[in-house]
Image (cartoon, rainbow over all chains, first blue to last red; front, side, top):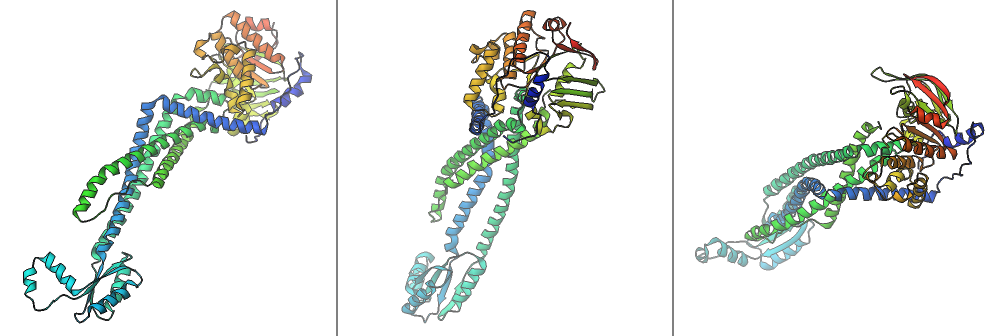
Length: 340
Length: 222
């Protein structure tokens, strides 16, 4: 529909009509198509290209399915890794409780003072939760887990101090250390204890996994582009004659390109849906084993499947990749397809 | 409408397709281009379709120099030309209707308009009742008529035909030529490359004779 400079053969035809050596019958007046007709034609052309592409995919169901499957499996790897990473990050969130700061009070602090201190601590910023553990409760629990119940009963006094178990709102190393220092400076506090090492290690592992995931994603996106490019190249080869005829009767590169772009996007769409399906089933299958393992560690952790929004992004992203792959393949081969 | 000015075409392998060819064709003319194989008939048609560019001289179509036409303009040039090939270049996996509709779909016409024009084009070549058939269901002569219908369906101002009767028996060849005459009678300029001198002689139209890329004759067929 773009206006282009072109020889106006119709005008030349009318100019020449007066110089004709043989009189011709008057030609039926030609009117150009209306804007609505052109718009309808444009929609019809896209509709026809889409239907043609769907028809070609369905015409070779096994070939199309396996192409989508190869692409889908390639998509599963980065997406699966990303989901795994999400789950690990969620798990690290549940481990946040293990990063609790133990605030041990002086032996002289009474239960009432300890309760009041717990309330002060709970109101502090960066504190998600604070739990008061009295001296008696501490002794009971220690007797239960240490196996030294008999020996502890022989002691004249309870040697254990009261304590406040503080669950921080963040696992950031600097913030945790700052909170620990503030808690240690509170009146009646003997010691505020925090083990940061595991938090640092987990953070480093997650950062490495993020980087690894990025690298794998880049490599697999390139693989996808190559797979779709090669598939489209084969389609182009199979339709070489048709493309030559289309170009001979006035088809633009855009017209030639259109069905292949739909084809690429459809392959991507199929691959995205298959990848979503494989990941959803894969995670559901793994989840039972993960729940059993987590149960052995007194955790109610379970795997989260593919969120719908992520699934939709996966399918749309795959369709876009298919479209881009097809575009690159057609652009590369279009010049070789001049009519002969 | 068409003007060749000292047009030369030399291929990269050194073969000379055309040598300083000059002639002019008025709008509405019916012109034969004849000569033996390798005389330059097909090269001449390829230059008009911008499938080749001249190595010297100028090819003017409705005033535009085709040697300077840009790649992006070529499809829009071809939309104003109808082409018929010796091997008709039909798409065998598409119906007669879809083959004929191809130029109209490319031009972005609506379905209704396409249906109307395809029916009219098939009626002109007496194949209106074969629209749903596939090319393999048709005889060679009918396939060639489908090729002609495709070439005229968009009502081009210029119709080029490269050996359109090469594979046909004399009766079918005459039939095809009659179709071209009908199209020409409606005002379309027709250029037919053919080496069938007997057929050309019967038609009594202007004839260009080429030999080894040179123009050796320009006049009415005897």
